[in-house]
Length: 160
Image: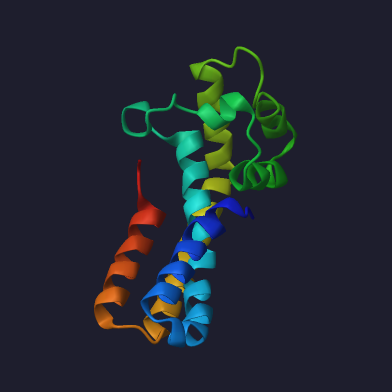
């Protein structure tokens, strides 16, 4: 869905593998990509959820910051796709000048009511599971697998 999260994770994995064992890089690259690409998407989607629902005390950003800015996200796209006419009218407020806390709360409720948030959470889970499965099968040492699985869980379920 976005390229930014994907390359944030995959490039360092490839660079680390190439530096650690250049002769095995070719055999490692595919498994690392199969881990990093879905995890990069999960990272970006978690960021989108935090941008719409995150608490300012945790994220350092105003509640609903992405909604106030009118940032197009997979979360918002899902809500629009599932919304009825009345809900679409509320979603049309995304990015409106002077959108206040009550407006943000209405938009958040529509996102929840349309099932968009639950759908995206399910997708984040599926992407994370795919990443974990890929790294479990990768030809790397167990300690690296353990750490990369922990990273996947943090990236996907973080609150800040």
